[in-house]
Length: 316
Length: 103
Image (cartoon, rainbow over the protein chains, first blue to last red):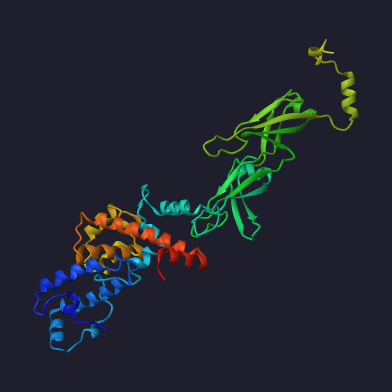
């Protein structure tokens, strides 16, 4: 199969080492398979040239060939590292594959002629299709709704979402999430086509209402039932807050409807926003009839009599 | 994935300073960062190609970017054509052969 190495390199039998080297370089440049991808003839030619060079570039081997101890075809074997890396996995094997885009001509972010341009060219020639084909396409974004408890939205939580295709997603709900807010989970949406990246999962948070707390931005409001005695005499009462129970001082003589502030006890600090406040509105509850209280009030004369409806005079 | 120390031993005739120069010029694009490069198989093949271009074919350092740029464009085009070929049915393929005048 192999031809005479002198003929392959096109040198005389008495060529100097330098002449052989020059001939090899010239032919290698011409036929290197990485420079002639897909050209079988060039590849065969390059193999022959490499094989011939293997023999003739090595003084001892060249002498053995000249003496007829080895023949040209006997030397056909993979060339050593650094001399010739093809056939695949040589450069072609990688460059032709999907991962070859790593060395796409556009390079590191540079705008230039690249694969997408060529795809675009074909798109123009054949009429681009919106879907399918062999075009590299990013997967679709998929929208999911996630119902979370009021306090989970306020305090943050991790919830598992089961998708229609059976996959499960652990969704981290950040503290201070608002009703209707959308979280984006990169790469968790629809699969890409032809090696395109997957789309994102968009998770819309629906915070369920709370029986006692109301949220206004980062503040939380709470109506707190209190007894007559607690507001008249003042007291310290436990109040539920998103972060746990705290004690609230009710000043003596507080009226129903009075709003007290617990600083920093609202929505916790998040995303550069300071913690909100918890506003407690007192709601006095007189409670079940109490004969002693009734008796007291019957005999009681207020020190500062006042008409609480004075402001309403003439309103009707 | 191999570090630069392994690579310079693995590829005969590879000079580390030259390699770092090629990385700076983005002719070789390993993962990682300066001082902690990690080379994938494709990067190793790329380095071998450049070593061959420089040493076997005596492509000069200043010509190297041009040669690689042309080569990369060639492979870009071949990747697209390959995908195109894979994406059409046999009837279309036959028609394409007709158009290209190959049997």
